[in-house]
Image 1 (cartoon, rainbow, N blue to C red):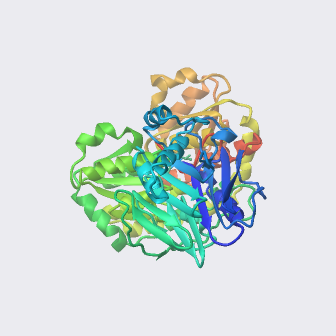
Image 2 (tube, rainbow, N blue to C red; image 1 turned 120 degrees about the horizontal axis):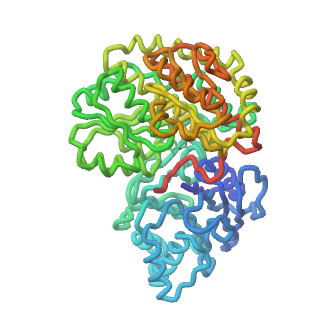
Length: 588
Ligand code: M6R
């Protein structure tokens, strides 16, 4: 997690860095800092909290070279002293970091035994002292940075501002890093979106490469310091629709955008899908993998592939990959699901799959991501930037793409197009019918409750899980999703008078079971909310949904997304930036 940003160009560098950091806040927002160079001196300004609303920072705008950082704390509390960038003892360089130095305790002890003193609890300060230690050996600063970086274990990316040579250095291993070029200006950042308002010319930095930036750029291999060639690529960046377009929050904007994002994710021709279809047909086993919401999407895709294509498909939580390792076989297919394409847990799972010569496919929203680069078959979800930390439109896009694959595997590509057209029309109608206001009313009834449950079965089971996660994330309410079948095996003990229980009821083979479940919880005093095609005496509150048959899950999640948003607003919480979370989870 954490976002890093560097700028070398014209005057006004602190402003450029501040603006870049605002666009990186999805990576963490518990504290931030900017270091600017002017007259061979580095000045640093750091603050606890989000940089989001900050207009001006007290650094010299005559500076033309600066770096910055927005933090998601891993080592050391959320305090000014632990915020990055960190200054070296002699003030000659400042350093910011994204990642976790896995061997930091060992390195720290070694450095302490050599007399280095530490003033923070961060693993980052260890890197600062390591660079100092190597610099003391009378080697060039570039070499000192390279050697220090080689001492680190784990996924780490660092950026340094060096006052002596007026340069920025950045080194990548694991956590993302990209360079942007615009005439005489150079941007170095965790992602392209952070400078997409400035340029679409980029230089990709691979793992174990470093860049040295002054008026030009040098790219080096970390292993031996050799210079490597680079190409400037033109990215097809959808210009930064990072504004709320009149909505009070990104979350509600992104929920409403599902009117067209679901369709966008499925705009692949059969020819484009065919290489993946072919790989799946040749595989003995197919796996889907993801983390958090993306895991629920992966799980739903696995369900669809089992139900619609009769395939042997297993969903895996990325961070629980270990027990599957020995089952993986050459030519098996693993489908990675990720909004950012940078989730460390998912990347590690793919590394295991690649060691086993599996075919890697992915459905990713962000362009130019690590997961994308690891994939044999990459599909972009094409949802546009998702700024709200809680994933909404990326989830439905990923699931819709899963349906497209499942239908295409069984020669029903054209039939799926009709279905997705109908779905799009019904989503339009749902918003026109006043669903947002309707859930707003329900929120007023529920806002004081602390415990909630949602039950689903079959195709709606993952929707129950994802719906519950959504509400937890933005409202901090205790909201659990269960398979309705789970109820009598223990969960029913939690049901007491007045507890709100949502029931997702489709017109399918599970309807009767779901209604029995409604009856069981209602007879124990629950306040039942039916998300269903038809009202029923068993529901205390009813949210009418269309009948989209197999595609129901894609629309059934929307009431939970809206509830999650409305509860946060009612509780005066910022739904776009829930506490303790970051959008891109680039650490394990
Ligand atoms: O970028 P990814 O989709 O790989 O991210 C995976 C999860 O970290 C993410 O879905 C997380 O659960 C979100 N907070 C969901 O709202």
